Image (cartoon, rainbow, N blue to C red; front, side, top):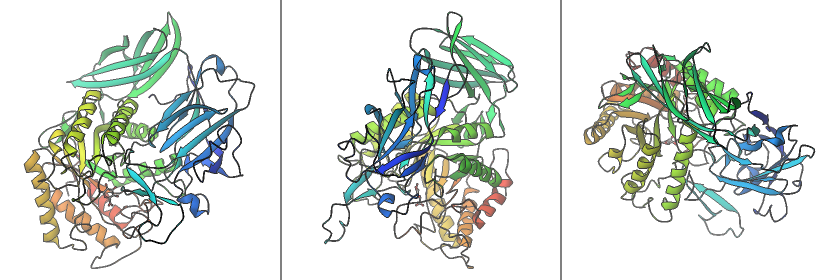
Length: 600
Ligand code: GCB
């Protein structure tokens, strides 16, 4: 799905701002006619944002079920001759859209955009009513998985009907309309999708494009422009390729972008234009290294979340700008869109700033953390979950595959890959992903034990999440214990599967301002010590291809005994101020060799 643009052929009307809002106590709003009349009450809610932290009402914060958003819309003059779509950047987990009381469509999934077409339903002289119902319930078929249970079920006594959202992932189930809502004015005959791949032969760059049109048959002209808007290549046809002499490859140290300008013509008349920033680069994996443009690339960086104070998971360019500034300040060259696809603006910025990204589907909450309970089984993670998982992979690749910053896909997060059912499930994921995108290496975030894992052979590199000194050997920072256990495990992965290994998650909850020497858990010193000991091990293994600490910043989670107002493994506080661990990493990541590997 193409990101909306405003140009000579296409227009955008932003619908962000304060919308009327109502909490639906019993999911009965439609029966009460809320889809076709003004919502009751006077509450308003900003779009985009999570609603959870924006009122003083605890029942709304932890509400399970539907809420309704509504606003009035004028269709701009002259638009109704062409196609008009409503585009919702992300709303979840289930959304339904009505226009003047007529249902235009539904969507599942909280992390990818969708649009509905207005067809003939536009009158430029009438004020229209746009209503969106968002339901945050998670079931085992959803990504992330969840389960709605009766509240108070752990103890007898409660006789009410309140329900509780059980979930198995470690971030708060923020709800609402999380990304921008837009009205799009599109040509009837238009460019629907653009996919690009690239390769490099010596100084020659090769760019292949595959463009889909919507509507009748037209002609496609393609021009490739450099940063000074000078044409470097051109071509014709919906599928084709061009060569670029003395190509400037895209790489983190020089994130060179070209502009692929696609013109759709009827005869000689321009009917649509879409200019897509593209990078020419290659990615592959050897036995010991991740190769970017044929050269070893070492990942220094972070796992993170779309999470911030007040906005919750709502997309926010202010937070985005600060997070990139902090990553650059740290000397990071990469991040992972843990644990779901992010707003496209993250990828545009990563392309532009030269930050490599591992893209991820919301395949999280797949683990019961109990080896006696099967999770890849009927009624839990089963064929329904798989169908949604595959659909999310398809939508993710359709949206993001053209971004040079995305160098790999992660298809599973901390799943119990030791279970028998994990193998056919992972095989289906890998088969489909490779069909859709044969160019990018694939991985799984592994928290199973190497000797028990049944799926790693399907992937290209190993990603290990492991918390020695925290969940394992809790509170034990003894240098020999930590380094020997970690080394043993990393070597076991390497020896069994023969692939390079990425230390994808490690860290420690740290309350900013808590100090202790000798270090004890939750102190800033403890987090630094974990990083120091992990670094010692990573620096001894030539087949380690990267280190991503968990997490860039503290973030909200569901409440629990091991979460003190959220997950505190951030190297930054939730308002993005550095803890001592951030200063440690900044020093470590500053001095690097050719591949980006810390050389201290
Ligand atoms: C993990 C998960 C992440 C958690 C983290 C933790 O391995 O991938 O979602 O937040 O552990 O802190 O427990």
